[in-house]
Image (cartoon, rainbow, N blue to C red):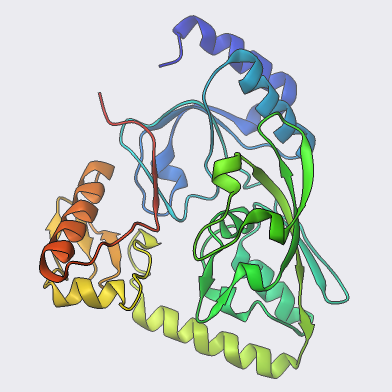
Length: 309
């Protein structure tokens, strides 16, 4: 825990960087995650400019306190003990602009909204993203993909803040984008914006593809309950959902967390689950599938934070 005497000191320093409405103390992170899980953050900060992002990173470095980037909380589980230090959410950085066949989107913008911007300008290449719930920053972080497309197909470059608080411009090749991975977490980059290169297309054809993918998503995925989306990566030669289904795990419940009856690849929060219950169910699924099929299911969802005291 941060020392009580240090709280006011850090709080006052944060207020010199950004406005009071952007600094929350002891904020419940369950209010900021798609799973509706997670304990409190000592400080949750929502900067409005790139300069503020830089200054907050430098403050954490100078004061030697923990710093965590939350993203928009879509592919994430925060443990019940919460997160110490400064937690940053870039939800206020949401600008999207289009020039010819290029779209520049800030990291807090939803990747769904970027795909809709592409549609509005009859640009093709981001149709696959029309059902991905994460932010632009999160989409780069994990090279998000669906229905045969992924971020690396259309990303040109990104502007990031590094661990020192300096801004860098990186090409897509410098991010080591691979199946649901990048070097962003390893390097400690904070994505500020992304530049996508698309192709001119036909509005009606693009819309038809997006409508079809939206229908597939809404008809097959349990969107009526809080969840982290797809929990596991696709194992080579298999489908995670099929393995879980064939292990008779659909409907399996620990506390308020349940393997979805609609899609076995999802774990849903059906009754005020705790993060501990959700994580316990993930482990149970992994152990059962390994025992039955000898296949290791790797998590796609990221787990952060501390266990409850």
